[in-house]
Length: 465
Ligand SMILES: Nc1ncnc2c1ncn2[C@@H]1O[C@H](COP(=O)(O)OP(=O)(O)OP(=O)(O)O)[C@@H](O)[C@H]1O
Ligand SMILES: [Mg+2]
Image (cartoon, rainbow, N blue to C red; front, side):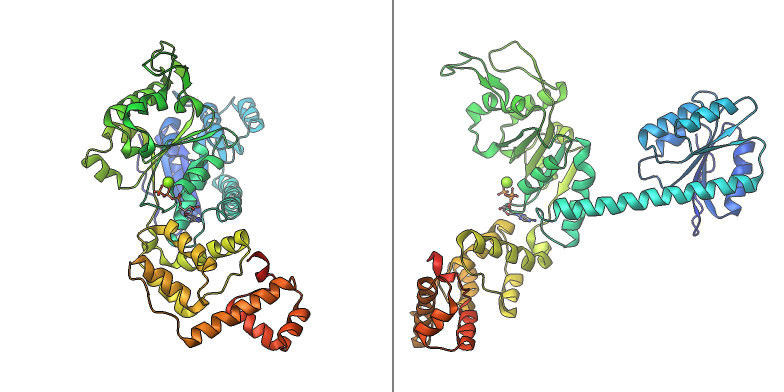
């Protein structure tokens, strides 16, 4: 339908769509706009133009009112439903003025009567274009703000991979579309699923997670679809299936590839029909929830190795989110580590020693096959360890590789650990009263400070053991 839609590729003042069934009108208008540096696409019908629009459309629409099929007024209504802030300028022939005035009340940006002066049109288009830019800028700003307020605290990371993921979550969460998350173990799939729920259309609805790997094949159907009393031996009461329980909220199918293929088939049917029949029942229960599923392997290989039904994959993966492994976003490691260490320090009321350059390097160089979960684990043990600070990481990262260090501590080490114990005891005994500690240990404040720093102790370190 689109005639000559080449967009002016040079820098331009903005994008304009012209919708008019008359080619001569389109050509003339296009010429004027292009002379004024606008990029122009023209369409002979509203339907064709509408196909090219979305809420991020960065331009202005100029539409004739009288057209066969969809009129300009109908077109404007459709556009308004998509995004009321896309400016629509209507071109009126004789007799349409009343219509155009009404359309403006309904949200059209402006109208212009045929025949018109090019300058008059350009003037209106320029203003509309400025308004549109402002609207889009504000939206981007609000979106960035919401991302930083809502997601940054939960999905921590500043690597390009995580930034992209946050943007995708922000864009897709409100749509209610089914989403497939893939990523290695411990990479944050459940975190992402929860963010999708919380930023989704029903944050107050239930979030029902099924760990498919933990559901034995024999009871998978009853777990998913529910059963009536006496549906099978041992079913001594009715049971609501998890699909039904998720109604009005989100169903999270974790480790979907662990579900037997045959149950995957039934699942697919339930999803396609948006209804479920519990085992032993004839009643069809309508389903309405947001579906999020997670798998560890890339979808293609899960399908190839016969763990995931292809048709189920296509049904679920309207949108597919991949979480990059931690080894591919090493710049996030120090940030995540200090977050987890601080949290552990709060929870266990322990001092959080700071990492030196060597520790940081060791973390960055480590092979994180267990991803963020492994990092979290190491950070917690780092805070809880009784080893001298500078040995902790080395020990934790090595002992992971099954090369335990068996060397007994030398004299320096023993003295050091004894000193630490004395400090901790004194701090605990005097409940953080520094003057009393100085007095008991007979050391000046400066020395006490230095020693506390050395051992990563705070005033209240001793209080929780
Ligand atoms: N970007 C992140 N920011 C903060 N915490 C994170 C992040 N990614 C993961 N975590 C934390 O790491 C741990 C593992 O994350 P999660 O359970 O979401 O991983 P998973 O991919 O579902 O793992 P599995 O494949 O084993 O089910 C959790 O404690 C989670 O809170
Ligand atoms: Mg998980």
